[in-house]
Amino acid sequence: MLDRVCISGFADEISSDFEEQLKTVTELGMHYISLRSADKKGIADYTAQEVQTELLPLLEKYQVKVSSIGSPIGKVGVEDKEGFEKQKVQLLELCKICKLLDCRFIRMFSFFIPEGKDADSYRETVITKLRQLVEIAKQHDIILIHENEKDIYGDTKERCRTLFEEISDSHFQAAFDFANFVQCGEDTEECWDMLKPYIVYIHIKDAVTTDNENVVCGTGEGKIEKLLDRALNQEGYQGFLTLEPHLVLFDSLASLETTEAENVIKKNKAETGADGYAMQYHALCAILENIQNK
Image 1 (spheres, rainbow, N blue to C red):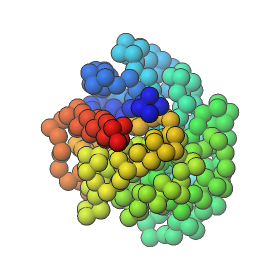
Image 2 (image 1 turned 90 degrees about the horizontal axis):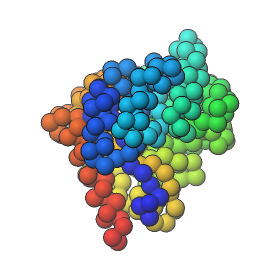
Image 3 (image 1 turned 180 degrees about the vertical axis):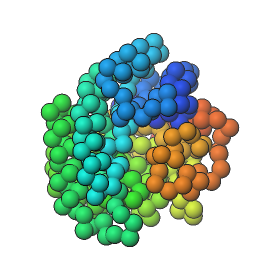
Image 4 (image 1 turned 120 degrees about the vertical axis):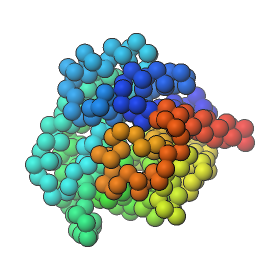
């Protein structure tokens, strides 16, 4: 069972220093990361040439591969035409970076909805824009994996399903995030049941609804162990389980969330980013061991 999955993670939660990220994951025995930022620079701000000269040599030195590109594509206002055009250019470069890193997946989103506006009223606009992004990915045979994120169009299970059904393309699939669904008031098991045909990638992040705070995986309301048991033992899931601890206030969190970081992490659960990352890794390993021993 466990030979069908690989543990990866957003290593920038360890440190902004890229080499420190790689040292930590290899010390834990991991061989993959999701590349979101390195050396205080978001991956969408890198060129393929910069990745080749600055990041690839370190990845090769530590023998670490990239499971996905943790891009901010789609994390722009749905009405922001200039921002969308900029992101199309970024996506083209990110596809080149994927090829360079022998990576199949680019994580992305489905646009922020203006506060107070009805998300459903933007349905056609969102789908039209996403189709343009999917066409870029298809040219490079890259799979865009949509993360269910708070405050975007695809933050509920129903709207996520709408996107996958309407776009209906193998280059547009789901990255399932337990915590984000919890923080949107959704039942993760119902979400899993509805989106199961589209899930090709899983984020390991947990949360509680009492204050929407992130917690160590398996200790919140995400039903992570129950759903991973189903996925691995009954449904034949194969692929990545990607750590996204959100257990310390790491450097780039404020720029990754629409709300204040303190609304997500009330207090550090660990002394350092490396400690928090290790906590999440060992908690996931314990969950997987429990599943295997059932």
